[in-house]
Length: 376
Image 1 (cartoon, rainbow, N blue to C red):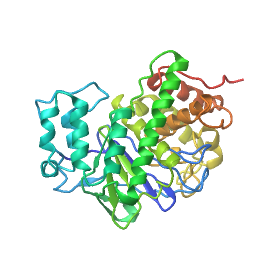
Image 2: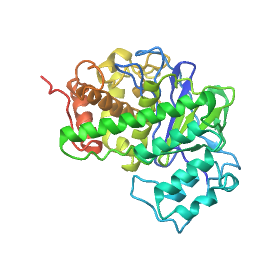
Image 3: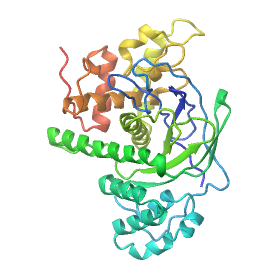
Image 4: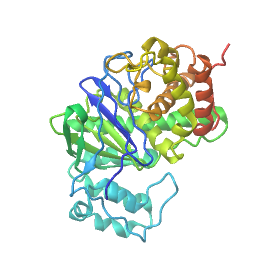
């Protein structure tokens, strides 16, 4: 089945890249900045203010990229949990691979979903006990699963065609899976602390996400892309250089999935603000918006080639502004919860547009919970 990505992250060298927006509900993932060592699309290794380059494309699966076929008799689980059939379709690159690995032997355990999914992990990663243990740890933490992404071909703009092939998180690539597990552990702590302080549940979904591994051939892009509660993770992605970078990459990507699940919220709720800022700061008809004008409105400090903030790079669209805003929420609330150092005044205390966008985001995705300091 052809996959339509909901969010793409593009990376080149040590820089973030933008991406085109496919049709249907989609958002594109890019780099945000701000304080801290990393940013939401795996952030640049040189820190805030790093230059990034742009590029785009939409993955086109090869003929061999058909996913495993769900069993129509397998009932779906809760909205943030994967059914056994969904897990099977995401763990294995296709149904033939699932059969070859002996996944059919797990069908007898379907009366207990957890046992069946652990069985699938066991079949998929039987050759690497460390990978199997990490995959099971992820499942215990957040109900996520670990699998392989089908082969993809992308048109990478000025970079030319990009080929992606399945690549297992074993050996030297095991560290990437370890970082993903650590990131999910942080998400559990973060949302538990946020909900404890707020006295209410926050509806932002991060559970039941499948992480599917891939490798770009002779390139370091894209670092990741997300669709249908799945994140494709490139072991050669130039931005996957630390655990913190990966953690913020995943939060950014998962926001795009939440955004799509909320009916493409960012275009509906933030377009007027975003377009107003872009119009206000674009002084020349053929030039990009001016960096200095954008500075008070930028949720993060990463820039692309030419000095434009990533959130406002022409062609990235409002969904990148929304994802950067969500990452800013995550950073500021990690600081408010004592999980990282504070990083300056709250974003909401900048120009009035910032406060309006912040309040809309908080109410839509985070249950109205705002633990940041009030504005003067």
